[in-house]
Image (tube, rainbow, N blue to C red; front, side, top):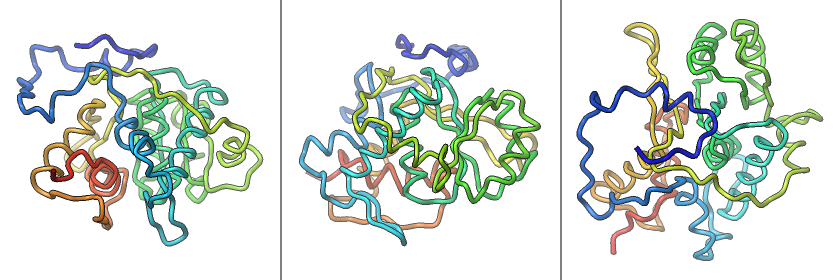
Length: 266
């Protein structure tokens, strides 16, 4: 494996031993990623260098967010995570929200800062929230204020969770208030291509939920594979759908495919 950027080695320590891995073959040129790779630099930052600051990145019922505005949100949240919340590289952050632009910004900020995002369904209740917190030893959560009740109850069952920061909030200690004081600039963590950037827990319908770990390169592989060769999307296409971002196919369909344009036909 490539030398990790993470101070907190929890995720890599809990990967299966290499002899149990499948054979990973990246022969196609679009799958040959550099050893040092932060997926958010590819999903977002590279488009600012191409002059896309004023192009629409995300459209919701409430607002249209440009690439430039999304990048600033992500950078401010990343600074809040590191400087205000003390996030160490490799630390896990629980995300809890319905689909909205601030959830997307928080998701990308965690990964850009070198954290590991653990997104959860809004329908999960106290015990269902406590399980991934305890399993992944999560100490920090970013949560939509509208889902605070079960989040606070889960904290009592999950001693590892030390801090919850609420967003879409007018609280003095809420994420938006902290963002106003944070720098709009942030340099992406120098992560390895095979550093874990998200843990997706299964639904648990056949037993206890399983935490599936995904690397920075995995986030881009779905776009450079399915996005490029099946969807064949171009820069004028817009994506819409109902899958929750807490599911990896929601993240792929509503964030990764629209944001990652390397798959645009030549």
